Image (tube, rainbow, N blue to C red):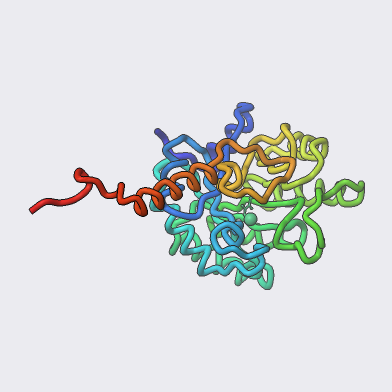
Length: 267
Ligand code: KIV
Ligand code: NA
C-alpha cells in the first residue's frame, strides 16, 4: 500500500475521511499498528510516562526521543511517523528548535515533528517548515506546560482561553503546520477550530468533530489500569491478558510442566 504523507492526511480532510493516529515508542508495537493500517504513528513524549515511568513529560530528553523514534521508524512501512520534540528542545531559540528538528529527521528518520504551543512558537514553526521539515501543532491541554496549568483538567472552557486557542490555531496554520492536535478541550470548541482550518485537526478528548483521533497505545490496549479519563475508550484488556499469561508460566515452571518433552533438545 502507498505510504502516507503529510499531503495524504491534508487531502483526507478535504475528502471528509477520518484520520487514525496512535502512539508507539518501540519497533514491535510500531510494526503491529503499521501493519494493522494506522495512518499516523506519533512517537509521543508520553514515552516519559509510559516507557520511563515519570509522572510528567517534562523530564523527557531529545536523546531519548531520538532513540524511541529510530526504533519506531525501523518497524514502519506505510504510516506517517511524527516525533514529539521534548520540553526545552525547541522553546529557547529558533536555532535550537531547528537543530532538534533536524536531528529528529536525520538521526531518527522521523517524517515530521510535533511541538506544543501557539503564538510564541509560530516564528520557529515557519523557520522549520522553510527548512523542509513538516510540523504538527498541539494546542489545548499541552502536557509540557503542566506546571503552569497545575491540573490535567479540560482547557479552554472560558471564553478568553477559547478565543486565544482559535487565534493560535489560525497562526499555526498560517505558519505552515500541516496538522494540529487538540487535546482535552470542549467538543464545540474543537468543532469550531476544525471548521475554520483547512489543515486537519486530530483530537484527544476533543470530541467527534475533529478530522482525526489519537490515543496513547498503552491506554487504548488496556495495559494501564490506573488511567481512566472520560475520553479513553479501551479496545482490549491486555493488562489481564499479560497477567494471566505470566501467572500460567510461573505455575508451569513451579509444577515442572514447562518445558515438556517437545520443548527440549535431545542428543
Ligand atoms: O505524547 C503524546 O502521546 C501526545 C498525544 C497524546 C497527542 O502528545
Ligand atoms: Na506529547
